[in-house]
Image (cartoon, rainbow, N blue to C red; front, side, top):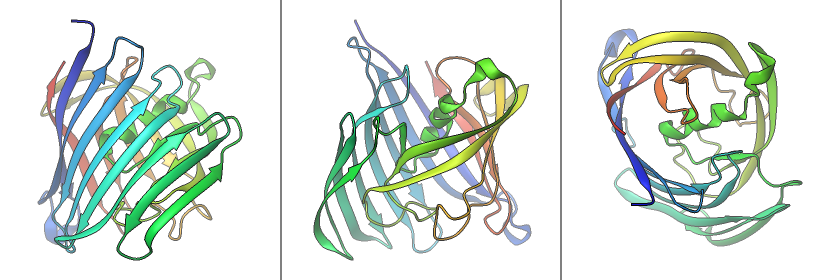
Length: 238
């Protein structure tokens, strides 16, 4: 067999005092390493907080540089269809064909000089993959990431889907060893910061731990501020 597949589950919990450690959602994912060198991510997410969100994402990307090739997203919000869209990425632009509850049928074309460096379609497993944008050869520190494609500016990814462009900064805190329900792992600790002006509402600082290997698998994440949410890898097969 020329391909291999990673499978897992991520649990979403609250860290708000009145809901401490209460389960608020879950995500199931697969990442298939194909023989042609392309990775395909499938992610099914369920957010229970009202209005509840069900999101299905398919993303094909080049694992050597995280550049996206194509992506599709389907959203249900509050148990009603919110939108469905398909995105294609070229050397200097991206295109999107979608339909959603707010805008109806929409076609987009957006310039991305040099190609989009990555895309976030809001699965939590994808947040770990984004850490590949940090140049580890420069050691711990802070680096800016630009030319990032986004399918929704909403923090839950509950609008659209449509194409947006943004940037942020990554802080590489350093190496770590952590234990989550899926096991004990050598890890890298990152922070996502400096989203002010890039989103309608600034995202609170986001701590992320990923596997210390080329897979950059999401292990644990915590968001403070008004969100007070937590994510952990609870199942892994690879």
